[in-house]
Length: 468
Image 1 (spheres, rainbow, N blue to C red):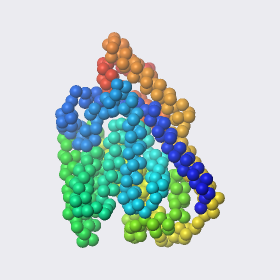
Image 2 (cartoon, rainbow, N blue to C red):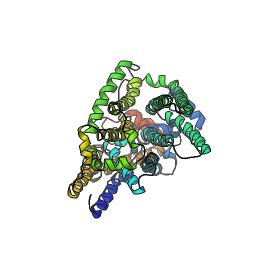
Image 3 (tube, one colour):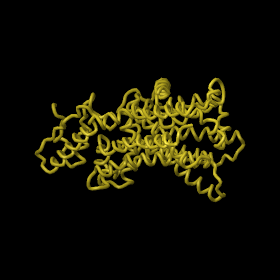
Image 4 (cartoon, rainbow, N blue to C red):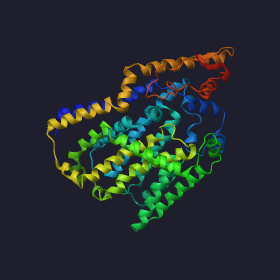
């Protein structure tokens, strides 16, 4: 539909749109819980640490293992390992999405087409996610939720039937049983998603009179992990810090309201709308080439339309149930991650029926297609997190953040050597929107400063906030 030179230019600019997210990693610094976990776990063994967290904080038996001896301890300079983690998570997100797509399409697409589709998915996710800073650039949050997303994609990929021999299928099932148990233990959100996924899948296998014992085993593994999470004594300790917890109807109603809020926001995003328009002329070709698409598109439209709302409710319910409020939006990042393929599924279903069906046959002129590609690139870079990242990088906010955070770390190193030194943290005047920061309109809290002081070996009493 477009000249080859324009196609290649589009691919190059699409790849360049990812560069700013890689660049942001060079300005990251550990904050808050990063220091708390690193200081608290110092000198502890893996079992002692895991049991302590399970008894006194939460039941996340999988992600808790990754909080001890994290990237702050990997190299002499704590920032080296810390800044490698966002790059690793970006790469793993891309590779896990590619793995799932390749399993679903069964190599019906060329490698170049697969890579293009995965790159577009990753860029849409980075553009739309509610909290980019906590999603990729804050180790504690990213390793809990984004790594959970990555592992869930691998799990879904292994669920797709393949052409393995009996021994290969059995080995794959054993691997997926282990993966199911790990994914459930990452956080409460992935726990709920896994329980819902395998409950529905097992019921479907039974209804279709297909062998259900693998599904039952996966459901059992997920249920065992969920029980280990739910029964952790630390949940009560953590919940005691919040009011209005364990209110069923409040959690359900607020989850429903948040689902309308976020689904509406994402559906109206320019990047998603333009990306959907670019898919229209490709729909018939895609459905004809990919095996299983016709069966998938027979899914009742009302079920497909309901799935994004149920997804957001499943993500927000644990937060309202355990704390009484939504709090940080790093949990909503999980919903955004899976909302994008669900939005595409809804579009594909509607292109097979109703008024939209006629649009699937329309092949735009090459000039119009070229304009669409330009608008898509603009939307990825001039709206949402794409705009915020560019503003932080080219507006100097990321560099200013780096300077202030680096100064604090240097001051604390000196305070650890000289106990008589008092350190006054200079507040971030205009913290970046795309990097983890708990300042700006909020005041840096005492426990955050104290954890950082303990990590560097200083006395917490040596630290205060300038102006207090």
